[in-house]
Length: 401
Image (cartoon, rainbow, N blue to C red):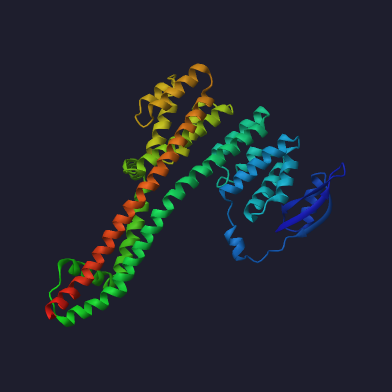
């Protein structure tokens, strides 16, 4: 069972926390072995799981940014790691994040280092996050590393928000267009089909196509849903393989307009994270290997891993990257300058800012260009449906006159 305890240390300080034990006696025995004097040990009561709890049941990116920023500020003020964690525990609102911090506190109280404690939560703290914390603890500059890490996380959140905002409008329009078409096919067209069959009039080709699609969807909707489900399952299995994922990511980079956005997003994240790891004192080869997972694209991941292998054999980073066309000349040149001047981290952070500006400009341009394009496509689709439905009625009216 999970128990909450309150105890005093040998120097009289109050300590609170949680512990897993079979019963209260076992918990008291454990605390005394840790040179703690138990004041109270009570069983935690399970609270009812509300809808609000469900909405907050996962630690978000904003929670991680806030945790990192606050830890940096508290440690910079001169407080110890344990004091910082205890202060943060009382300030966190998200139940999931509070539970994680409680777990970290328990691990640190048992003598584990900070990076070992957070490594038990890989879904919240990435391998890069853990590596940076490890470097910070080793160098004694944990507060500064946390500050840089918070800056990086904030920029990452801003980048994702920018892309999401740009894609929100076209996604909503497409979804609404699909919903309208489905409603027309299921409810409107079948009613008109009966009317046309009773009137026994010749139908234009466009009308026949619409009626045929409507009949197929109406009569064979289980088959349609089954085909969609089967397609989704087969796609997931295909992309779970290395060859499938590689082909999918290659095609993604070739999509007109969007492919360039994906490329700029990857380059921004790669250069920023790589520079952060190098600046924290992580070995270059290890930094490249860890940064490969950040790319989120198999093409770039394979290239970065290969670059790390070439660097390990003695080739410079710039020369190793120049063998791949997916790394633009400005990135290769900045890396070479950083290697020559001994300021690789600064060069990488500067080029990441360049890519970020380019990406923001592309996103704004894409948003402006998509609006008229979507309206044209939407207009063509609506016009096709209207013409298909109205033309037979118009022909009938004309013949009667």
